[in-house]
Picture 1 (cartoon, rainbow, N blue to C red):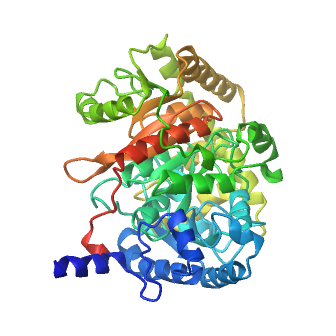
Picture 2: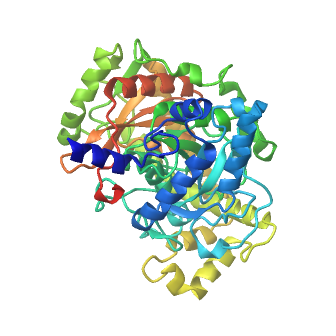
Length: 507
């Protein structure tokens, strides 16, 4: 008994001065501790910095810690003491990590994990970072990521970048930690931060959330600003929260959605999707009741691919959904499925051309930078073969993109194919069957959601016999975040599958 108590104390890293246990604490828990004078933002930040020093050499989830973080925490504590209006926000005084492709106008670098952008200077905070600061959040540092959001090389392992090397899955070290928002997922899973931000073009929030047992929200494209984010495709790029709980993710989503003049077209168009009063009111315990959930057992991409192992694994989840009032709609069909899936290959053609245009535009806007174009980055890599491990991970994706010449006939056809695939595939399926969400395993539906700019939420769904995490994904039509949040929260609160990594390195 005594040994168990000692172990709990060691694992919890309780701050003696406040008697508040930080690991696994939610935003709500932390705010309550602030208000009861059991914890300060400075103590919270110092705890995370200490934990990062111990764990980051193992997991490589962070690229940099902000040298200003403690000072910003002291300011937050003073604001709370003075009852400053900003201290009423849910994220006030809460440390946040942002992926290393999200610009911060401070002492942190923004490099997408590449040495090519080290010491470049961004013109301003990214739109989402500006909103985080306006909500009183503390930028703790930059999360590691698959270099260039996995768009440099077809051979690049998930979670590897030249600056921090290979990130490690905290549950099973030999498992793929997935990417490209690898560090954003690992850092919250291992309690090196309260919450984090990731980005997704296709799978980069949903996949690492699935692999590292965290909640990831991939928002409707345009719901969150992409201004100041190192891009791949303005048509598919989105920024979203990665957290330990659905509620924490919703707190962050509430803070970062909305109009941004630097991403005006997309964010203005998406304003109609933001519910009056925000998203927190959709954290409903009975959120599954009456929801029509589509399950496609036989279909790949849209479902479970007739995979017996996966279907057996998820049968208990189907029962949980039914028992909590959801209406499972099965035996669904997609007309001309093979033709629709064939059009998915157009994504590579479109992204290759879009990346060159978008990256060149981003690099040109930097105040100072060693590189000003994709061609410059390619040249940098050729000059620094060892530093960037070009022989091991050649820049074939970069080179293919560099060969493109804008949106010409081939690219226009590809974009039309993607539009048709979305219209006659996912949208028709959802509308014809009056579905609230499509239920899929792991991150298998990421491409379906990506090509049409649709939202999805990954929720931890359990662990395999080896301790490897897996998640369940709820995907919906544009702007369906309120409904998806109700479903995801209802599932999470009923199951509570997530558990922290049981790793000896945490002691």
